[in-house]
Image 1: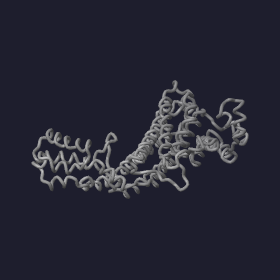
Image 2: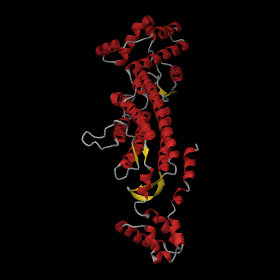
Image 3: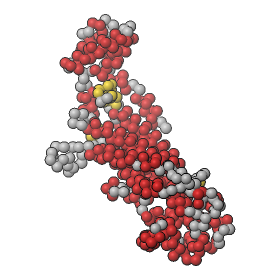
Image 4: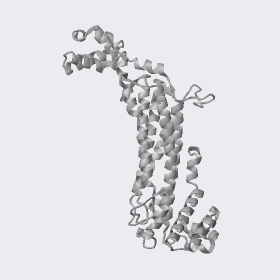
Length: 431
């Protein structure tokens, strides 16, 4: 995790302090379950809860010698617990601790990310209603197409992030499993009750078949979901970057007093926040591939996944957490230039109504092929020479032979393109 792109709450999840705290909790709950089964004295389980503790520097010191992080932790834990420490970790293997803890931390991270998405949804909904009928030109292939509204753009982003929230909730549920099944996952030396007990106490579900590790297809889906969310985030960022171009200027990031855009050109107001989001999205997506590759482990387990996960889990979750919060702020403070958007809408002299002319001619009895030719011929003259499409159509006998002047003028009514906006908003925001 890079501090510049990390927030405190998410960073805390991936600290050694939190990791060992979760390890201790797992071991203590396992001892409580073993005591309930009569496998260890209740007094020993109580002692672990009362005396259990750790010191990170001491664990590091022990690990430097034994070259095994879980053994180092257990050795340090025993130094606090005393004689009853012999009952800790009975029938368990390292992965029981590592994988169950990893599930807990990913679940904690997902809680934060879900809250982040809620901030984005709130900002998008507010701005979508604010600009529900703010007209702008829709573009396909970057070229003017037909009128739309700024609010409708934002409503589309809202619907996408609502899907992303649902995906993340599902991915969190899938990742939140507990494995306390012992070597190669057979429960030979530990009762399945221990796993069930620990899972309930840690807010997890049991892993049906753990083979000694929790299957990594779960993790692959989790990180793939983060990648999809990052792509949705970038889609909004790229839209804003396009709209902020000097030639467009329909929207722009808020530029604060005292902010500087360029070391060389004092006039610059660059879309630095959304450009940053594009870069951060690339980094989150970069971790999807190793997550997929981690699915393929040797037999019942190997540790080829471990080094990758130690890097990708903190980095991907912290980076996405930072980026989502930045995006929420960008949306909240986004400057919408409605007048500029309207000017851009009218730049082609009404060509954006070409489909309505085409449809009106077909309704008046002209074949679609001929209607298309008539409309396109007139439209190309506007492209090349400028002028107003409606005036050109009024002077075209092929058009006026089928449509009255009033019918032609009515085609150029902007309200025609906003008549179903409420229907779309009801679909998006009613649930």
